[in-house]
Image (cartoon, rainbow, N blue to C red; front, side, top):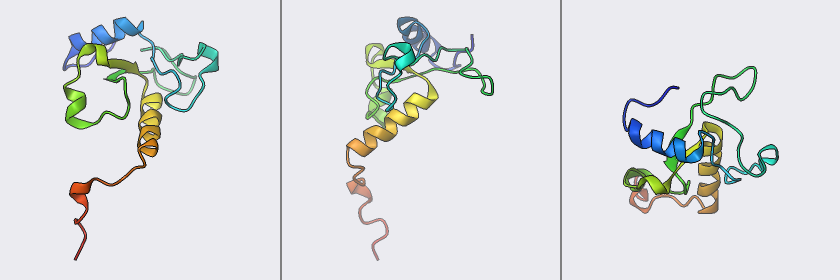
Length: 111
């Protein structure tokens, strides 16, 4: 199995807890009907004939978590995500938050 070079022990612990399967339960917008509500993508397995093997990521269980806050999370606050579910869940979280611009960037282009 391929594992990351950095934080491999943390990543492995998250993957073992997840059973080496994506833990998305619909945050990405898909109902995951074939997996009884949970994504069926498994680490190292093929999602389809024309795709590369799935590489799961240990990322915040709450897809709205960003930046430095995500780096400080404990193992219990991380989940296994396949790339497709993680990207879609993050987009959905941004849409739900209203995608308000960062107030620190408000005057960036004011002249």
